[in-house]
Amino acid sequence: MTAVLPERPGTRAGAAAAPDLLERLALAPADRTAVVADGRARSFGELRAEAMRIAGRLAARGVGPESVVALCLPRGAELVAALVGTLTAGAAYLPVDPKLPAERRRYLVEDAGADLVVTAADGAAPLAEGVPHVAVAALAAPGPELPYVPVAVSGDTLAYVIYTSGSTGRPKGVEIGRAAASALLAELEGAGIAVTEGGRVGWNASPSFDASVQQWVRLCRGDTLVMIDDETRADPALLARLVDEQALTDLDITPAHADPLLDLLTPDGGPRPLTLLIGGEAVSPALWRRLARLGERGVLRTVNLYGPTECTVDATAGWVDGADGPHIGSALPGLRTRVLDEELNPVAEGGSGELYLAGPRVGRGYRGRPALTAERFVADAAGEAHGGRMYRTGDLVRLLPGGRLAYLGRADGQVKLRGHRLELPEVEAAVAAVPGVAEAAVVLRDDVHGAPGLVAYYRAAGPVTEAGLRERLTAVLPAYMVPAAFVALERFPVTVNGKVDRAALPAPAPAPAPAPAGNAAAPELTASQTLIAGVWAAVLGAPHVGPDDNFFKLGGHSLLAIKLVSRVRAELGVSLPVKAVYANPRLRDLAAHLDTLVAAAASPNS
Image (cartoon, rainbow, N blue to C red; front, side):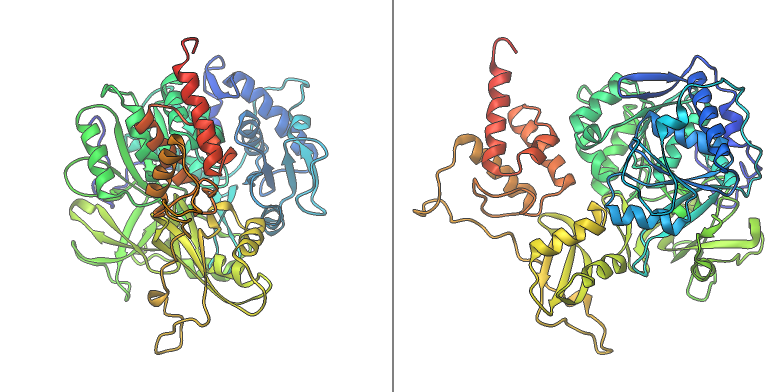
């Protein structure tokens, strides 16, 4: 291993104030590639010129320090230019993923008090009434070229607002200052994670999630950002091809998406100049061992990153090696960890407690939520942190030798699902708001169609169907927050103190199976239908699958779709794109599509 992470959480290396990100961006060679997107490369000179035009036009609209600009743009070069242009104007950006439901997009813009919304095209439907909208093309249109001179700001000036799931049923916006964002980059470098000069970094995360910050800050030190589109993100084969074709040096990825990628990424067992930045959820012991073996053979290196949005993305890091089982490492240079018991006393090595984080990357707080800010951003127990505050993470950890930490789980209703952080009470509130629902509870289970998933339990007070529930929730919640299964109950089990007994909630029933083979009503399956049915049964945990069954109605989701195409590739040697599963969710249609691919692969002209 070529780099060593800090072993003790008390280290002060890297804690000095880092140069502002845009000061560093101004030094990148003008002819070096800054962004690769949509088949086109943009140089740093082009990016700075475009960002300066955007900043000037934002300033003409009254945008400046402490203003918030909502960026409702897909992942691409325009998003990067708008983000850098917003920061150049001294303002903060609010990422609003265009794929979010309209109601949620409106809420983000209004709750953040955004001064302006930047959209992909003229005439787009307004996200919020009374808030000015402008197309990114109008801001970036050619005009007088000016020297790249960002507006002067302080370290406490707001850099961005990113929303996370809220325990009160409403998402909450986390405010992060400019100095904290700059320190993140300096600490990644100081910890030996961002080591390749002029590296090529894959932007893999949704801009609405804080992992994206870790990716775009690398641009400011002169690295190249390679934008990964949604189709490539969802298809392991396409992602592996992009890693090689674009010679990526760094890829941020969740454990769930890393697992099916590894076989395709290392088919020859040869080394890759690649660092996997893995995080967003716990790494399983099996995946940890697999990654450790690849690291020992010099094939690639992997670092496990942990951190809450409230502490500027990444707080701890640990190299994945074979020394022991999964852990989240130790604190990055500018932060300090404190593992405290219920009385706020430090726990001894080997003990467990709640993790608190202190240091200059602790965020400003929750936007417009002073009471919640006071609850989670508390006085520093040791009295030596920047600003005298600690962030109470709600995560339970065990203190290992050398200051490393093992993640044990949550102390509240927050969960991680396929890399997304969410509060179960927010999902419960959305279910309970559906007309006809009298009571609701939502839990994360490991046994939903063979994979972890949310299960919504509800008691009806009127006509309610699963299809109706799913339709209403899809309109107000991000896709990852829509439950995979729904269970109707006549009454909820309760504990002795009258609260819902979540441990006693029943497992969701398996998907209804069609008539078994041999039944006169059961249709005969073709060879390809039989193969697909077997794969579906394996990944969905369904005992019987018929030709008219729908993958997603049986509980399929994006991660299971990835597993599906991986199994097809392993059994037939045919590359089935993930988008084909979405385009052909019915089994007989997907089997027919597979027949077409097999025939094309066997053709002498292919």
